[in-house]
Image (tube, rainbow, N blue to C red; front, side, top):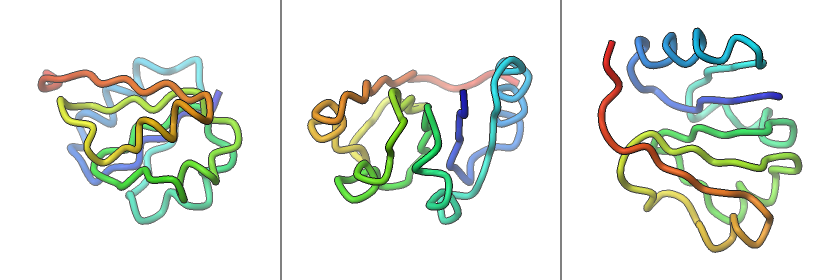
Length: 96
């Protein structure tokens, strides 16, 4: 399973995810560099990047968008659900 964190967020959070997901392929990239991974990822952790119909259209295998934070204004939830992609959020701060 390919899990991609597309974020310019805290390095500590990325390392926590990497340690927790040792049984999966985990890749962390800047939001501006996620494009080449969209067609092959299974899970997207999008940060602040816009996940609109155009982005969702490139996501051939994705089954989950896991947003780290309270808001999901940057994700077109209706289009995601139409494509069979679940959207989840985890509000709060990660503890180092």
